[in-house]
Length: 127
Image (tube, rainbow, N blue to C red; front, top):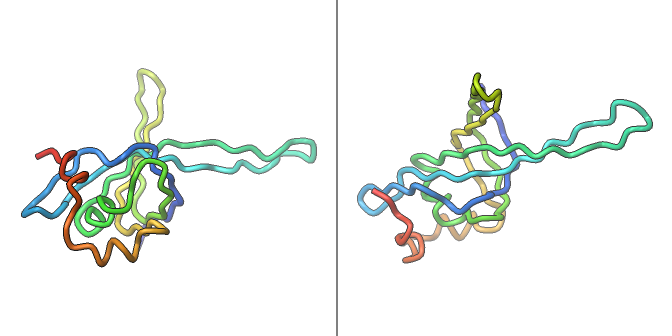
C-alpha cells in the first residue's frame, strides 16, 4: 500500500454510525487514541507520553471486522491514510484515519468465521 500508515490504536468509544447494505456493514466509525512517546531532549529529562485522539473510519472490507471486534477499550492495529485538519479560528488540530486494513488482536479469527451479527450490533444501527 503506497502512502499508508500503520498505527496501534485503542478504541475510546464504541462504534457509531454503523451503516448496513443488505444486512452487511459497509461503514462504521469510532474515536480512537494513539499514544506517542516523546524521547528525552537531554539526559535529565524523562521520556514522556502524549495521547492523540483520532477519528477512525472503517469502510467496505474493514467495516465487517470492526462491527464484530472493535469495542470501547479494545486495542487494534490499523493500516490506512491519515488526514490532518486545523481549525484556523480555534487553532485546534483534528486527525481522521481511513482504515484500509485492521487487525484487532484477540477477535480476528472469530470475526472471519462469524456470519451473522449479534442483536447488540443491530440495536445501534443507523440508516
